[in-house]
Image 1 (cartoon, one colour):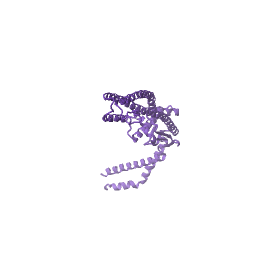
Image 2 (cartoon, helix red, strand yellow):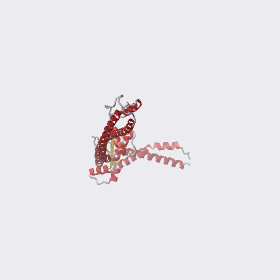
Image 3 (tube, rainbow, N blue to C red):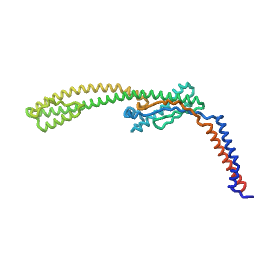
Image 4 (spheres, one colour):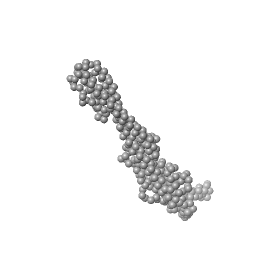
Length: 346
């Protein structure tokens, strides 16, 4: 018996090239038949533009309390906002609204399984719906786009309201801060004036104030005249250098009276502003809740292009895949035949 040779076996199989062609053709025919027996589902894609208005990004402070972790920079803030948009588009509320638009009795769970989102950053987002029927896929993608856009548009309106209220609260906080500083300075002056009244009373009322005490008094006056937004110690009737101490007591009494009057007015204004703030806060927090954390900095635009629909797999792709599987089947057949012949010659 001739010895078995692997090279010869391979050459024999290659010589039967028609078998390779037969396997490939059969695979292609099977693939072509499957496109009719099991047609590929349709994928409908709706485009949506989502962006960030960077010129308004400094207005984001009012949203930080809603973040699970505080956004520390622009990228963190942007990514947080985009994740919020994505979560809202996939929310049960939006999907139920889409089903209402369709007038579809389909249950929410099965509808969710047909959906997908594709986005990486700001810019073009794609909402995809996969269904067996071409028209059903197209209508579902359109309904999802409409429901998602409508919901986010509503939230952005609430966010605009929150931004306006935030600006109002910021202005109130600024005024309240100034008044608190003012009252603090007034109270400080009242304490100092009481101490200085004791100092003046202990001096010779007919003699001028000593240079040392005058320097300390001038330092106190400068402290209370440093900020023009706060209360200013009156100096129009401040005694001259040669005036006796008694004149300083008169000046101090007049300044204390003016300080007390200003303190009462400032406290009344402070009470009014704090009451205004307490009145605005509930509206502000409600607007934050209504916006679901979305910022008025978001830019949302549905693109004018129509929903695109295509089959997930074309007939040509299936036929090509069948041919490749046929070629693989021939290769397996050839390996088995070579091994079988090799064992027969052992």
